[in-house]
Length: 141
Image (cartoon, rainbow, N blue to C red; front, side):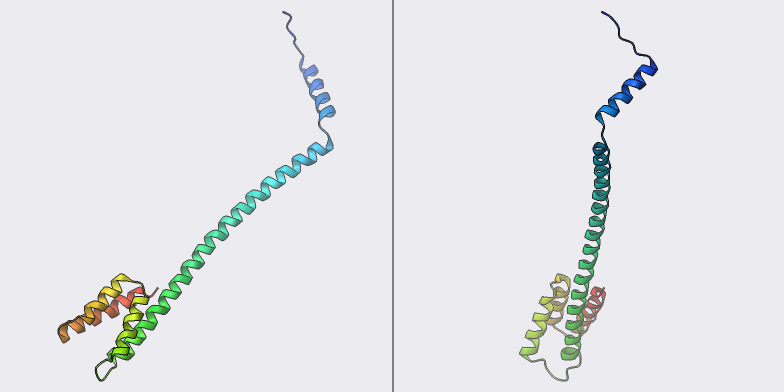
């Protein structure tokens, strides 16, 4: 078998002739377009990711604001109807308070509310009110 050896100059001439005969201006333009599209895709992916993270933060703030509104509304109702009451609380007010506390969807607040409503003595009720109000304040974000 005969070995084919090419000198360095022959290799360069062969490569140049191959490139000039096979690579056209359209090929170069297509390569540039492909690179630009890849860069744009990476940019838009990163922008999409940032927007997604911002959406999660906004939704979290919106949920916190809704929770705060509910907690404050219940707290105000509790203060107005229970703590400022001069006489016994009527059934309709109790029902409104119970509905408002359940609407908070917080098991710990509900348990604290139930400890208050089932208090046997005035001292137990006072202790339960302190705990309930402390818990309500701690839930405000």
